[in-house]
Image (cartoon, rainbow over all chains, first blue to last red):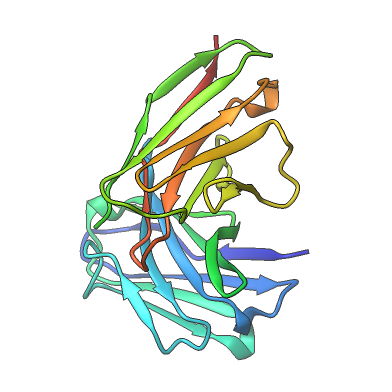
Length: 122
Length: 107
């Protein structure tokens, strides 16, 4: 069974830092591209970041560029999101999500972590 | 950035009735469109990809259609377990974007 298990998150003051982790099991983690998606309370989904299967290509949403860093450790089947200079508007549930492919093309995000709440407040 | 707009924001439907949800893209995304279902306190679940292909394990009462900029998700006969928020998402390029969601509630 494919599983993505997240850890990290919590309450942090504005300007602070936090690191989220996402561990994959039940599949060959190193073969899949991964994404971070967040959801502010009562709001829709917002894509945050993408990382290729090898970690060589990384993209960020403009809203987090320069403050967040995505990385992965394929030897440990793990994905990370380092969040610095946090702002109140970063308050959200953060999800890691596996990017699915079929016949070489992307078909969406087929497996998601359980989500972890990040609250930025003084 | 491709902007995705969903309508209506809330849809009130009686169990057993049909629900039709709309999603519009600000520019063509071809068939690179997915639909997700999200229940309170849970992560989204992939329902439809390629605009019209059901993901593994998704029942046949869920169907998707459309291409280019106009897309529709239809739930043919709503069951109690289907009351949830539905999100559309384009994956035409690496900058994934989601619609604002449609909440399907019990009438």
